[in-house]
Image (cartoon, rainbow, N blue to C red; front, side, top):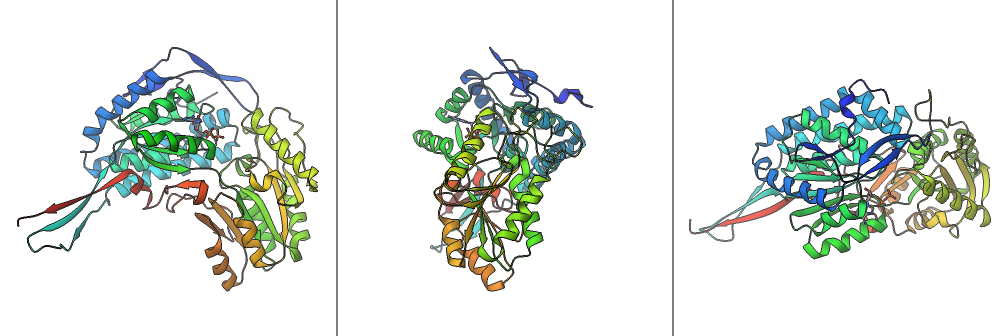
Length: 481
Ligand code: ADP
């Protein structure tokens, strides 16, 4: 990998402001080519405990820094990310596979959380409450929760870390990040820049490697007061159980099963554009990607034909190739899940409009796929495909659409396209999801609260609400006045 700033590429562990080795390493591979990228340190229990100790020691000083100083560090960190945008994107495309243009977009998105939360650090206000006693006063202040463990997935290797680290550090918390084993190099590049931005030793640590050992060390530690996790619902449930023993606070951003409803009064062209962005971005590997298209009867054929035309025109290629629009899936297991979902859908009466096969590029590349005549008996109706497969269900009435959309235990993002104002309000309020895109397929931004209801998790990230997850409320009663 050719980088302008080669120090960004570090295969070690970042603990207490120092780069360390681990007793063993693992080979990280490029998902597009299968070629080895680096021998990366495989951290485990001991390294995690050292990182937690360092974060605990650093907490005392970091929480006392004036908010403006924490803000300055976060702003500088954000600027450094943008200054190194091309290199960070190249590291990301190499280890994660997404097209370079998307990777560059993610760098800016990830940097935005650091800037945003740096600004929010200055606005952690308390309250004075009218007292219930004449000789007493009631004050409310907010304090950082303490050491935070951040466990993040591979699909957004930078943004999922900064969304947590920005809020945590702004609040005065210190953090141990456990990135996904597939994407440690992005996390480490962030650590290089954190140090350059002046973030003190121990405030931000990164330990990648043995997932189970690192996870258990974080969950068992009494010093870790909060876990912020983004990943699968199964892992989220496990962490929730493990958190019980030490009553850790939890923020969980788990799986979704996003519906995308197209009503017959929708602008078809706009709906197809939104559908493409929301479905095929990151090869369909995001928790807010559409999993179920619900299309009203009168425009069903027009919509599915237009979607399949657009999908079959996507350029599938190595993320570094000029004009690449869809990269590989992250690994073999992801490819097999997509194949299983497609086979199952076809067995249950699905009609293939395009794709449906592995791509001729081989490896984990898969063709952009559209399946018509989807129905609730198919596995993909209940289970997130996490791949480039658009399954289109048909409905007649608004009520039927709402019921279908909500017929899932998940509730992260939902989208719908309609122009009737009454319908827009009715449907937006009836959807059981934390996020609703109305005539819009891309909903992620640092200024808005991201998070789910039902089994999609708890807590919100980004926006003015995001910092609350890292703060404790303290009430002081001053008596005898
Ligand atoms: P995905 O399907 O996106 O890989 P996971 O929930 O498996 O979802 O992974 C998300 C993050 O959680 C990754 O960093 C992964 O290593 C981590 N993880 C997976 N299992 C555990 C576990 N038992 N304890 C702690 N972290 C885990």
